Image (cartoon, rainbow, N blue to C red; front, side):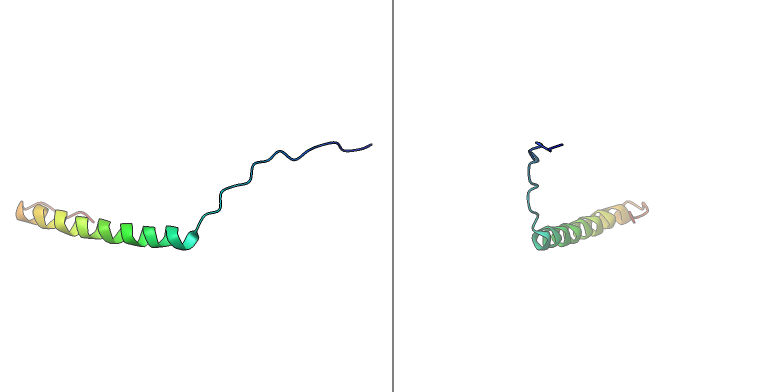
Length: 51
């Protein structure tokens, strides 16, 4: 019995993990800054802060 199967799988795109990590770190900092600003407004209104 012979196997005439041909592999037609498409290779996956490589991911630059360092670049993705750096972007996630930047986004986390931006989220923290936005949350702090939002919490300042909530405090002015006498409302509880976001966690």
